[in-house]
Amino acid sequence: MDYEAVIGLETHVQLKTKSKMWCGCANEFGAAPNTNVCPVCLGLPGVLPVANEEALRLTALTGLLLIAPCRGSPKFDRKKLFLSRRAEELSNHAVRPALDRQRYIDFEVQRRHRPRADHPRASRRRRWQRNFHFERTSAVDFNRAGVPLLEIVSEPDITSADMAYEYLNALKEILIYGCVSDCDMEKGMVRCDVNVSVRPNGAKALGAKIEIKNMNSFSGVRKALEYEIPRQIQVLKGGGKLVQSTRRWNDVTGVTERLRTKEHAHVTLFL
Ligand code: ADP
Ligand code: ZN
Image (tube, rainbow, N blue to C red; front, top):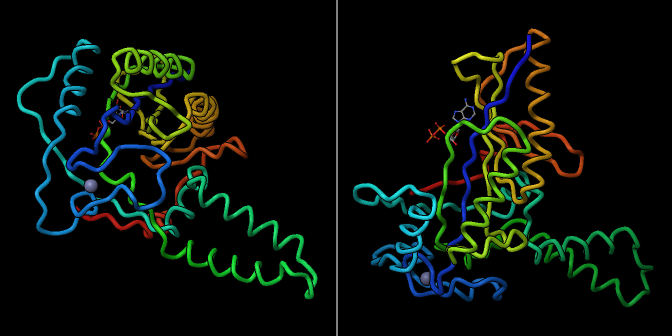
């Protein structure tokens, strides 16, 4: 039996606004940790968030650019998602912030080339180790909290890895030309959750949806699908069963891996 793929993409795009979604803090990249924060975007009690008019305009504009005018009244979800350093480390090695990565490298180099005891760098090493430990357990940067993100969800009618890649590039082009977003992948301005299932050719019913979370490059999306679609087909051909689940793309090994529930346990979500 032959199988076909069914793909739906959920794309998060950072809007090109001067300030954040609910407060006047700057929406900028690369500032020192926790300098663009206020009681509103820190989510402290008793604050009065005010919607960013430019973000609303850009959202409506995107609707027009995608020939999908906004219907009815808009609905907002204000979510607070706190990811401790530890959770981040366990669940997503790929998107570790550059600042912390730098520290990691320092630490690893120091360990591998362990200086002699009388070497002046010995004390530096100890200090770094402590910092490193601190970073892992409690440091967090709220500069990105409250940055306006627009989610664009596709119907499940993309049918191949190449088509998904083209869809994303086309979407990016529209958003850049519309001045909606700079879509700079390097700065994490576009992220994508990839939903993919397979079904016997011509079948009407959709197969079990497998979600590959938090992709940060379009070529990564294509590679992940080029791996994941044959994997799913192979499971079914081997008489196996697929269940709805979440995976992540490991760019180093070139495979998708199932996320263990243990990893989710470290993520605290509160609304
Ligand atoms: P929600 O998460 O709001 O319940 P869905 O799960 O229906 O929405 O859809 C989320 C995304 O997953 C959409 O992009 C949709 O096209 C896609 N999707 C839904 N079901 C499947 C499936 N069986 N196979 C592939 N993609 C799917
Ligand atoms: Zn703020």
